[in-house]
Structure formats: structure tokens, C-alpha cells
Image (cartoon, rainbow, N blue to C red; front, side, top):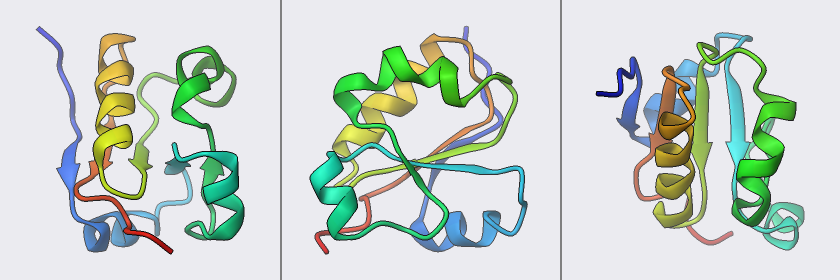
Length: 100
């Protein structure tokens, strides 16, 4: 059974959590979507490359990670993948950030 300190959160909750400077904010949308608009402080790891690139950006499996996309579908897939890989402080922004 997977243990996770995180869960599904609102965008407002995510923004409050970002006051902790050790929190990593990941946008799993495409590079093009990221260039148009992204949340300040986020890094872009497109869902298509997520499994390959994740270890490069998240070295500590206990680091707090918040994942988002536009609608919540891609971020949920990334959230599940991180849990499967043993990360346990993972949060998914429910419903995404919308279209910018």
C-alpha cells in the first residue's frame, strides 16, 4: 500500500503551500502551454517526458511536490506516477489552472 502525506488540493491551497521554499511546483502541460502562461516559480516537465525526467528534478522522495496542468487530467496521471515511483509528499491541483 502506498503512503502519501499529500493528496488532491485546490489551487488556493497550493498557493498557500508555496510559502515553503522547499516546495517544488511542477507544470505538466506542454512546453507551448507553459510558454503562454505558468504559475510563478513552477518548472515545466511535460507529461510525455515525466517518468524519464522526474529523477533529475526530484532527488528526495519526501520532498513536497505540487503538480498542475490546465484541467487536472495530466496532473492526476503525474501524481499517480510519482506515487508508483515511491514519492510520498505529492499534491495534485484538482481541476487544474484552466486555460490561460
